[in-house]
Length: 319
Ligand SMILES: Nc1ncnc2c1ncn2[C@@H]1O[C@H](COP(=O)(O)OP(=O)(O)O)[C@@H](O)[C@H]1O
Ligand SMILES: [Mg+2]
Image (cartoon, rainbow, N blue to C red; front, side, top):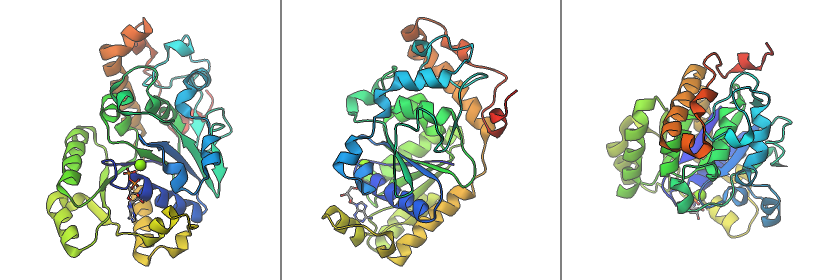
């Protein structure tokens, strides 16, 4: 299952996604964690040392390797250079399994049951950039080629930025958790997301964070309505970790642990829609072809779309 945590900077995306990832790992479930936030802090939030994080090759710095592998012997993709971030898989493409033994997952670090990968450091300037180089482009390619099943999780800590919408990255997830603080700014980001995502059938569940009082909950309920899934309060265990003390998920308060179980149940209850996944991959690829990719690649990249291919478990069976 493909899961994203999005929200305004500082809302708690990294914190809540790291808690969810730790919860899945504690349940001994396979989980790949990907840091695609503008500030790369997920590794630290998962308890990795600076040296460990520094040792993880950034996906965004190895686009050539990723493209060369994923295109496999797909006849519609002549070269790695002709592959753009939205190029969908087709017959001949290499597909990925969660945590598989492939050159993409090789760019990860396994610690305490979590497979950690990172997009690489980027800044606001990278976000609007269409191009081949966008750091989140590597994550998009990864997701576009990944055949995941129930009980397998890829959790992406992501920025709520323009790039996410422009490329279609936000349609690559089974569930998107929008982390919202009980403030007017938090609500504004919520509106922006739901307005945009409504047309695409994306499942968005709001997770209130840094919620302190019943008034905070009422505020979120008033503005978000039924989209409000649950709320996380201030977690002393998170603060303690940031003060350098070891973190133990067992020390989270009972309600926080229950919140994490609820997030998991929400993901588990979400039916896989491979038809939508493939259709929207093609739609956004056409959109990108027209806006920049054809010009950048010097060829009509819409010809890369394989009309008879649909990603999903069946695509893993050799023809
Ligand atoms: N529920 C929480 N309890 C305690 N501290 C929190 C909580 N959520 C976020 N924080 C703190 O708030 C700050 C911003 O959170 P962070 O997860 O880095 O936000 P984002 O990734 O959305 O920018 C961090 O210092 C983090 O530790
Ligand atoms: Mg963050």
